Image (cartoon, rainbow, N blue to C red; front, side, top):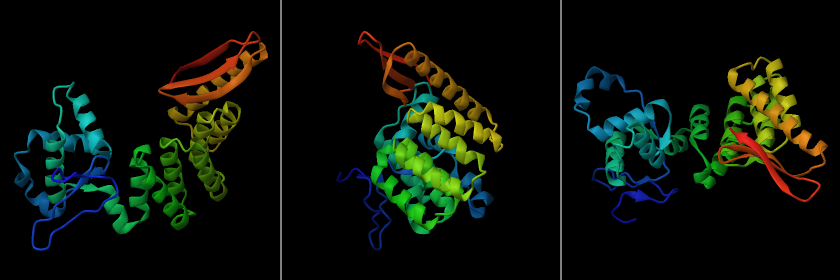
Length: 272
């Protein structure tokens, strides 16, 4: 949009010769906080006083990388609805932070270096809103880092957030061949299988993850979920129902659907 400073995802950063760079920002560009350089650390007061909006943006980026819209929503939630950042104030603050090297745009950083760290960081931040970039990063990572298990796990999680479950499963199978005793690979694969509605296989894969040392609370929770939904759907089928839709996750619920002998459809599930 001319004059707005907000660009469509995928367009480049523009800089005019002999003038201060004009930093164009997309709604779904992803930003990360940057550890201050030594020169900054010598005089931290040079950044003070912080504008209210700048402070809240930095707080929002302190715990995770976010795109602009997510920053707006996070600030609104953190302040109990008292501070609603407008797009103009948000992106004006982001431009200043980029110029001061206090934050960075992850896609730009990745395109410059395309190393393991920047690839994993971008994979962990991307979601379905950037489908073209998701596939671009996934294709690149699976070629350049085909034997790097942490990168493959990050790619699979990125695919999951984009609801590309078959692709996520394929990447994890490849990772499992490289590291057949890596518990985290099995843990993430189990989640993919459960999201695809295969509670029986998911249960076995979660048990294998635990066998290989993945005994954290999250893994135990997912294992319990697989057992609950496996038993729930099996009981319904045994009583004469026919499976219509396998158990899967949607809108914060784990849901499946069966049809009873009288032709009635029933949904079974619980909140995630």
